[in-house]
Length: 96
Image (tube, rainbow, N blue to C red; front, side):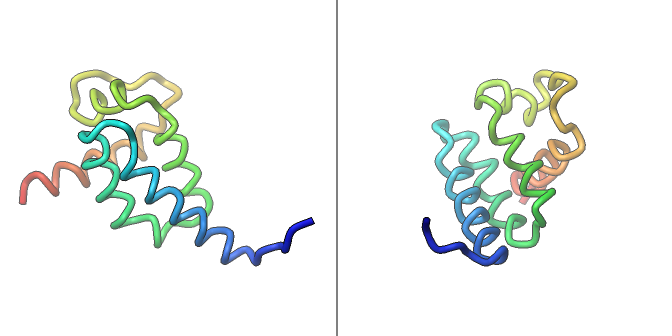
């Protein structure tokens, strides 16, 4: 019924939504980890990479924070390669 958007508009809206979600997690610690990561990377991500970020962001904050901080190993269903990108980004930011 509504006006269909071009694929580029769809991905643009999705990127904006993911950036917003990254900064409004519910816990300040995860906001400060995922927000800067999303700001730095989302605009260059394709649909597949956005899917990977979204899957990670669907995890609850307490376990996600423990995985990022290296306090616990994530379960097998978590995309560890993508999580490693988030961890490396966070470590680079705190090292500055």
